Image (tube, rainbow, N blue to C red; front, side):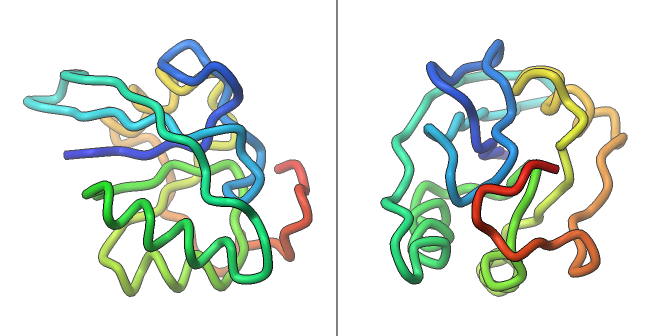
Length: 125
């Protein structure tokens, strides 16, 4: 399973979880195998222009991401992730990417639903 987490620079397990999916510094990709972290990589974000969030959805789908842990996210990208078959979970309370991944593996994260979406614009959640 591959998990993507919008992250603060420099990325990796010790990086902070970015407050909003569409305006992150980069994505940390975490491959999990047998309930443990197997591989960690970072990829740059897609430029956030008009429609940039949906381009980012397509980009992450192309990276074979199964799950996204996000602090905040708009309704359009949430719908895009749902259509792409990528599960989205709320990770706003996690202090680091590694803590968010561990919370996910324990089953402690809530599925991101429409009631949690925001209008974008770099809001903090």
